[in-house]
Length: 83
Image (cartoon, rainbow, N blue to C red):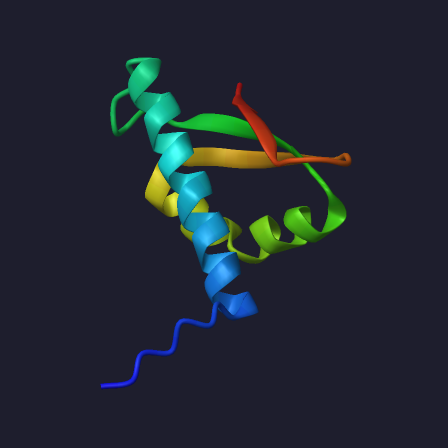
């Protein structure tokens, strides 16, 4: 058995999106939100990350129960808060 351990750009992007969705779900739980509670999200990230999130926006919104995502382009890590 040969195992390919190379991480492609697609796998890296998928990991970033999954981690973002997990963090959003954790934040919803911390705030005591129910499944049907729709909230907005403000994302501050660099241009590349904003584009990645926008590309996956419908899936992110569906899975995490968001009513919308607002973007702010900034340097550094992806930061987000619920509104």
